[in-house]
Length: 492
Image 1: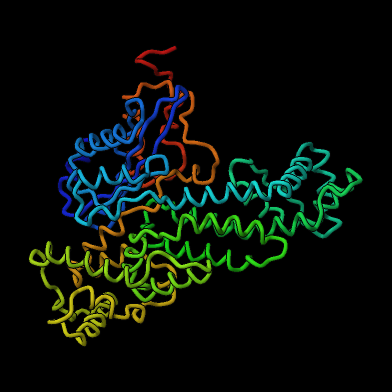
Image 2 (image 1 turned 60 degrees about the vertical axis):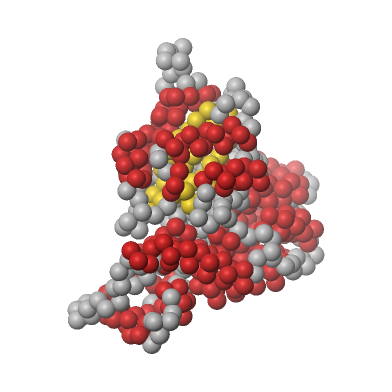
């Protein structure tokens, strides 16, 4: 299977993006997981773990670099790396400089970065939970009390009926997993009054108050925005580099909404300051990839950047002029490399009357109004209003890979650039880790496997899931092997 993957990589004329993250086992040994992300010639996005290796002690920048380079050489992709996204344990200027110097990327390593969107969201949410813990703890206790015994549940169900509410079971949360807090609060929205009366009556005291719920439900709105952003940015089979800017805007908007709220202003301020700390320097890749969305393009990126800046009352370190300059420069690199090897297909026949042909004929009609002798593919793409060809449903359920697959014949160079920009993922951590305060630690069963077997089983499991298109970003990479008592080739 590994040889097949190496052969597949060798046939690529485009590039591969990698994500890396560190794990430790119960013996404090360090492992690195390297995942390759790539779009094939049919515009299908793939994710495959290519290694889960133990790092030589100590896990210094040099040893991490050497381990990753060894893996890239094994798969013969040294000259195909477009980007590497590092987790916070690896990301630093020294690491990025070492890879830039040795891989000689065509764009000076500007797409090597350490901003995992999901990880940063998690850091912000973990800090904010500490600020509101007093109020959440009271709600948590009330839910636990209601669900603690059949008698309590029955009494609560009877009280619900007197309020004209359908009885329901509530989701309990785990302190270290903020998504569980979101789901718990969400389940309480319609029943918070009856919960309050039930728990206060039981203790003949004010255990829960309106103020607790007011704060909790404002926090719930924050949780929902961050929860949705985490799930969207953790997609496996849909590009995420082109949707990060949208999610950053959505998050900035919730700060703007509640910044002056009397009861939530202090908590909002702490969250916002941390958000700005990480995102006033938005990676250029997020802007460039968003330009490749024909619904947004350069003008849409400008709106999003201005909106984020306005919502946060701060100046971002990237402007639309920076994006435009970078976009033009990178396109020229692709044009010089690929223009002579691609064919002009703008003169395709439009004699067919099927819907697809009609759509493309309308596109060619628009394109004909542009002076093709003096305008590049990039200019034509930016100047053409493709949304006029979309229905509202198509705009809402837009598939960017499907769109580029259809239009690559008209943008033979720009489509290659889009292909590379859309490959880069917005995340390095598994989805469940993105909601957790815990570190990435192998459980005891996994720690007992030899490093070679752990590497092999992790890759094989992921590749089989990839074949079935059933991969997810849950922390279950080798779950199927947890019951194997394998250590140093023998059973305990």
